[in-house]
Length: 120
Image 1 (cartoon, rainbow, N blue to C red):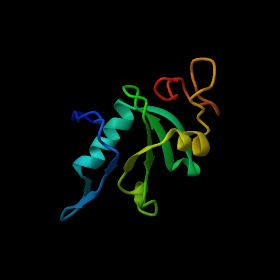
Image 2 (image 1 turned 180 degrees about the vertical axis):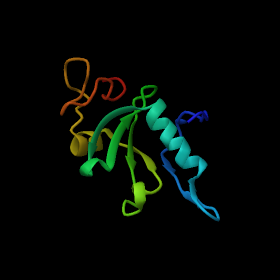
Image 3 (image 1 turned 90 degrees about the vertical axis):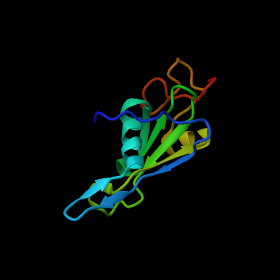
Image 4 (image 1 turned 120 degrees about the horizontal axis):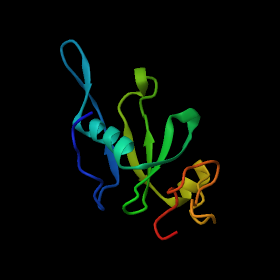
């Protein structure tokens, strides 16, 4: 993946990718490509749920939590991606991330350092 995309803007809350049908194949649209770029190049992985299909990330620039899901999970490879801003309570309740945990990492259940919320 060589394309550069924009980082998440402060006013963004939801990105929904799509697949584009061509004559002989299906490709990811620009939004889906941007989501993949964000979760592999910009966001910090914090945990997963739902058998790995729901994934929690944190933007290290502003501390916001983002949930990656695959709304069309029955489609091969999970289908297009959806990346949505979620409140810290979702990070705590669904993924077990404790933004106030001691020890600098701010996370529990083996989540990597850097998963606590901004200012935590």
